[in-house]
Amino acid sequence: MMKQIATESIAMTRPYSEATLEQLLRSRRSVRGFTNQAIDSATLEQIFTEAQLSPSNCNTQPWQTYVASGNSCNQLRQGLVEQIMAGTPPKAEFDYFSKFSGEHRTRQVECAEALYGAMGIPREDKRGRMGALVRNYQFFDAPHVAFICMNKEYDIVNSLDIGVYLQTLMLVMEAHGVASCAQGALAYFPPLVKEVMGIPEQEGILVGISFGYEDPDVAANNARTSRAPLAQCVQFKN
Image 1 (cartoon, one colour):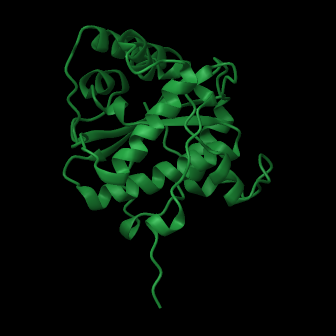
Image 2 (tube, one colour; image 1 turned 135 degrees about the vertical axis):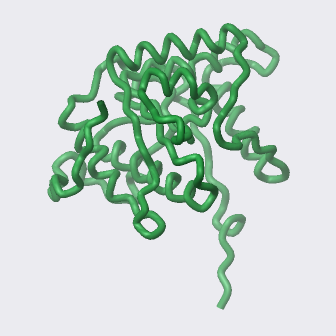
Image 3 (cartoon, helix red, strand yellow; image 1 turned 45 degrees about the vertical axis):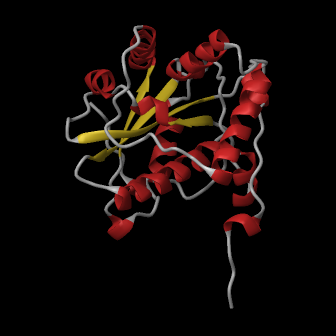
């Protein structure tokens, strides 16, 4: 049974990090290689308690988060890899398959080039790319994985709240020295995840996030991406 955490228990001191918000934003990145060191239960609870302070439309807080560690994490890891290797077609509960074009497609390609370049996997290496795909479902060896759900009756407006919550969660993790990787791919096989985690049918899995402590020896963690110049994304008008 998932333990409910009261926001009233949040400690107002921040002994774990003196980093500014800007420093956290600059240091946070998608990590794709973790050690097997588990996060202690007190830190785990504090992270998700603080993330609960995330804002939402009319304070509805539409997210439902399920965190797997230990045996449940390993069970999911094994089961999801088996689904991939068996060629099971993905079936996400929300529309996930966007086709990017223009500058967005360019950025997508640049991101892939940075990642596969860091791993030393050329574009024509289909076996290597398949191995990289499977790593998603191994949670990059992370000792923890979370699945963030939303009621299936809700739509894009409510999913904005989930996005805000996800960003809040990742920044809180960063402040605690915990690395993370948000993964849309973890929403592709909901029946298995729901069975293991006891997720009600009316809740749809929107995104997953692998997290733990970074393994600096994993080549994928050398990948770096850039951000578009401000003028490309923000317009000011007096």
